[in-house]
Image 1 (cartoon, rainbow, N blue to C red):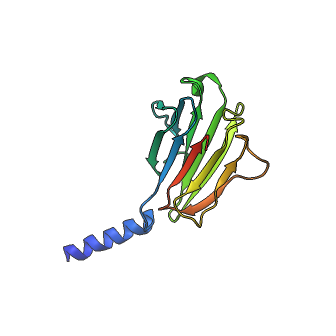
Image 2: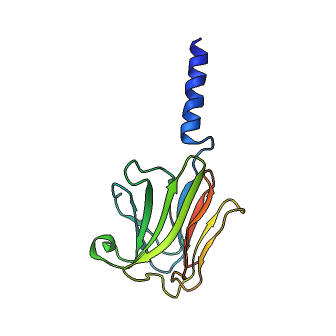
Image 3: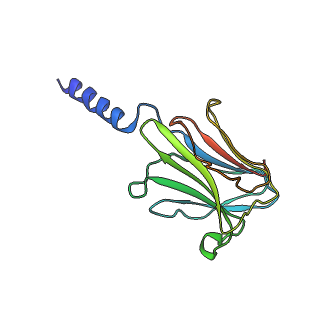
Length: 156
């Protein structure tokens, strides 16, 4: 009987959180300069410095209890989040079965002249590509299975 209750509880948990494990949001810095990244939802992470030519960051998708989503905010300045410097925002929202992701700039275009792209570990999911580091017109929102990783590559 106890085993049956445990199985029922696990089945309920799987239904509530989705049956597939959550993937990861990743950032790779291929630029010749370092960048700083903050993971922002209802809280703000400590600053993460991504070294030039290969610095990386990754976090497992989570659903923020207050905002629903998270945004990986990236600037070329170490204090850029707090000083209004140009930011590229790689945002995601985790649903039970899907991950929704988008890319946008605020306060300017920190990677103008550099290729920026978001790709997925799932070849069936759409990419976001900014050939010149500036957002094109139209919606940049894409969706994929929740278990798929998405990777933002700077200076791709």
